[in-house]
Length: 171
Image (cartoon, rainbow, N blue to C red; front, side, top):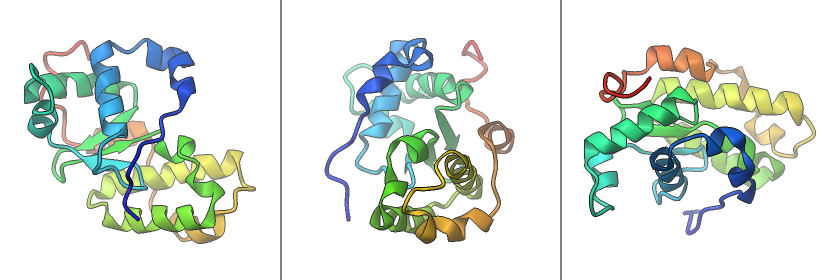
């Protein structure tokens, strides 16, 4: 089932960490969250020039600079080798594990994710969610993923190619 809309939680505006991000990083996060390429695993295409092309004044370097802020805060993890970006909080906030059918969609989307590092972060996020919400109905369908390799966002950043804008950003 293809996505035709984006669910954006209204409480994002009450989140102090999100509120402390520069508006440029908030824009990029919302852009990725509403991207037509975003899968049910929370993975979107990462093509900075294409993202910048949706604006009147930005270039790919600007998008990479905005991404540095999101990577530093572990909002987004980017595998530039596979051109994929993972929205790290997606697993928790999308509510997919409440529904068996949506859990199946997550498992299917996980299988289409090329980056082994991002796949491991998805598994890590599933472990975190299962610890706090073991009662969710989707676990019987996503349980097969829980036995796979898992990484924390910090561990993943060590494995992922560095952001080319990192040298010029504050991080």
